[in-house]
Image 1 (spheres, rainbow, N blue to C red):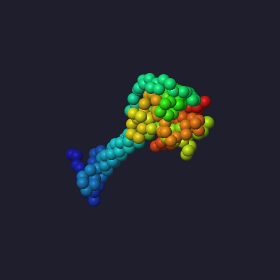
Image 2: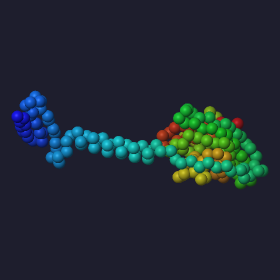
Image 3: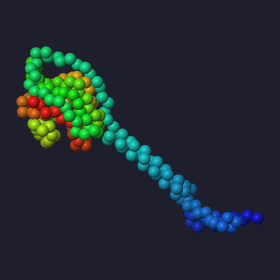
Length: 189
């Protein structure tokens, strides 16, 4: 005949099985959940929270592809450059040119494409090496998400502020503000 004795100490249940020769220990809390179930539930909540935080901070912004023609045909090209990406994860391609038009200076992007990121903007820099620095000036991209993020792709123009001395800038930089990472640059020559 099989006999099972059960003895309860605090919140631990110990079952003795004489024929099997072993004991089974089950830990239960006051609410009746075992420690293993609590750990699994806590791990699931942690993974879900991590996914939400990851999406908020790392999700790339949606992009828009445009094919605008040059609006000011009489504009004079001042300087231009070819974009190059910083690495495989942060790539930028296409060309950019600075023009002087009847309404002031503007940047013209041709065949522009860049890796999507969560907080990417276009900057003008005085650096001839194409490096972002504290003196770089953020240029809001019309049609860009949020505060003028660089979410457009293709062919488009970006007007420069009228009070900006466009002649002193030597490069255009694509920079992720949130993580302080440069995606790419074009040296203007």
